[in-house]
Image 1 (cartoon, helix red, strand yellow):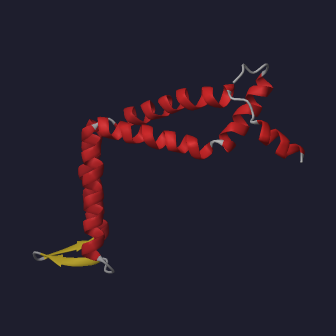
Image 2 (image 1 turned 180 degrees about the vertical axis):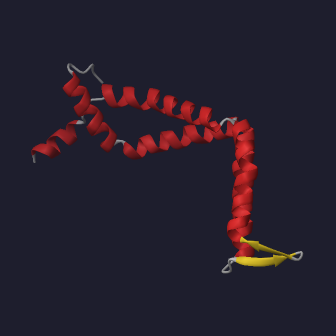
Length: 130
């Protein structure tokens, strides 16, 4: 780890490190995402309920687009629209935008300094020359 000497070197390091450590960065973002969802319980329950409803709709409808239920004709798109109509107000209470902004900023605070200050590994420099 060393301090970059110029903007050009910062750009070179960030480009290399994002490509070289991309799977590590994705794992870091996934871990931070899990933490965000588990600490915002209302958002967690909304996501879990949505997943359960979508699974139930896929299971009940299987290969058809509509079914008869208690004398009513239900379409798959109608059920999804109802789910969306119910979830939008509840989602605004759960603050998903605040969670996304927090996720982006914490990920940037962790990843950008690593990408800027970490030098290119020696074996990568040798591989470029060969």
